[in-house]
Image 1 (cartoon, rainbow, N blue to C red):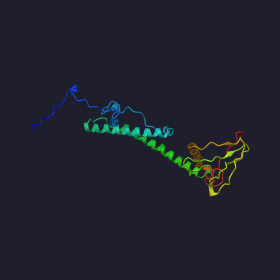
Image 2 (image 1 turned 120 degrees about the vertical axis):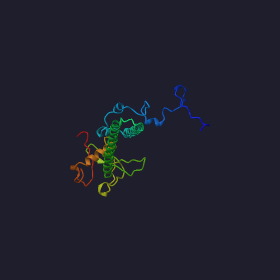
Image 3 (image 1 turned 60 degrees about the vertical axis):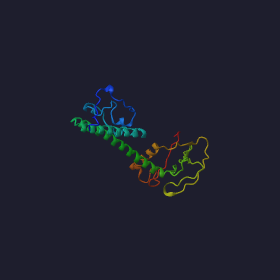
Image 4 (image 1 turned 60 degrees about the horizontal axis):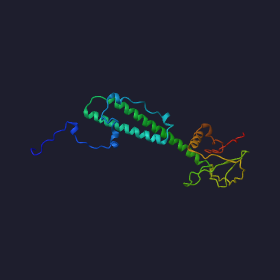
Length: 229
């Protein structure tokens, strides 16, 4: 031991070695912007309310994805501060950290709720599309998955010169020729919003008996009014 003297701490900050640290290093995510390992109880308690499901329903998939990982980052930060508080035996700040962590978890629960609603709405829309003769769920990528029905001035409906997919009951529809004049109008392609709305209509108890048009269980036959009507 006599050969190796004990190291002497450098108390003067000006004489300490400068260690280059990347300011954008990922580990800084475990600390606040001021890079303190432990905040005061007042600083920890300064937060807003958690997000609610009604607000998250209007958010995009990207916004929900970003918000989820912001919550994960915040919980990691709070866990780091809780560990440092226990190490220092500070004796304060535990209640504030628990309250903030509880609010973050409530936001995550609301995100799961909103995504679960979207999942069930998508499944309902998919079931509606399965029995809709205009939609081909088995279409190859890059091919037309929607064959619109055309309506003329007299309210008659026809298809382009294509063979339709069997509708409800497995009955093959005959081939229709689109021989209408220029005033024939094509209906807009369906979107997820349209399919979700159709799923909501199909869930209406008034429309469950024999389908919306009474043609059979689960069948939905669209009807469009002419603009002149």
